[in-house]
Image (cartoon, rainbow, N blue to C red; front, top):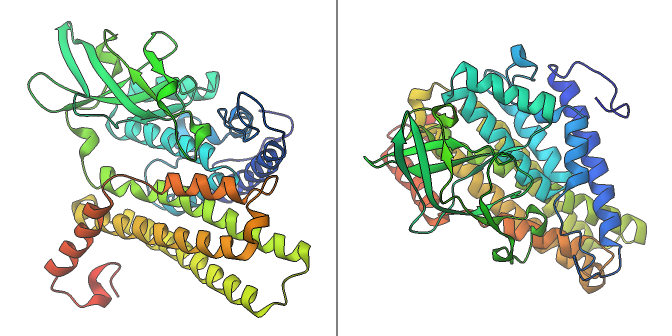
Length: 395
């Protein structure tokens, strides 16, 4: 471990969160320096490259292993049972420091949780070795166009991939992504792709976003790549099982809330430095943001409690995750609106960070199927015959 991060017991959630808060502060300061750079032909002075420094700190701090079982050298944030809320707060810290780093880190955590849930003991042990000895970053790349990825069986349990994935966050840096492919007989298979041993076609030019540039979320063509049975994670369709599939929205919502917190903090500090905290309108805006942020933290508490209910209650768990995701989006929109009014045009100019922060959060909030998510909440609510006080957490 890096000497700047002295050895501590990272199985203690309090220690892990303190370490994450320190990493978040380093990320924040680093992004502030990038925002102050003059424009350049490669990144426009906006720090659009992959967050290499941020992931160096994450690795040095021991946070890459947070979702590994304790018996394999991790913090045990992979199996609920009292670890869900600390994990959500950990993700929020990283998002507070850097939304692009938080997005990629959340995918890393997701991949390790999937391997712990559905992989073999040997696959999980190899993943732990990759993380602890080689500092490899995992991810989940599932987005695709109509063709997607198809798997051809070539004998001996081996498969050949045909097709591509989109929005592959961290492409070129994530060395162990999980990708899903359709099997010849139907169903979807998770494949753990060893990117350091193959050569897929990575199209970085495809990624032309209005924010979150630093996730370098390329299109990746896996056509012709062959994998063995040791690279296939779980049975067919395991990836889409609830509550883990839809319920996992609480992870990215936590990162997003971290981005909203960072905006709120930056706006408060901006007013404090400018000596503008006595204006009634600014106080009203600060009040609205404070209410929104605290409600987001309460949603995370509720989401963690729901997640640790029995898996047989998968519909309730996934629906509560849908509510959390929707609430955090609305909270983030409120914070962005009030921040823009608070800092005005001057605050949206470089080197102030607000323009970059708003662009990143706006882009990250654009998660798929928002209408279906809202419809799910209403369907569940109208089918439940219990009083409101007993619908979600119970009394």
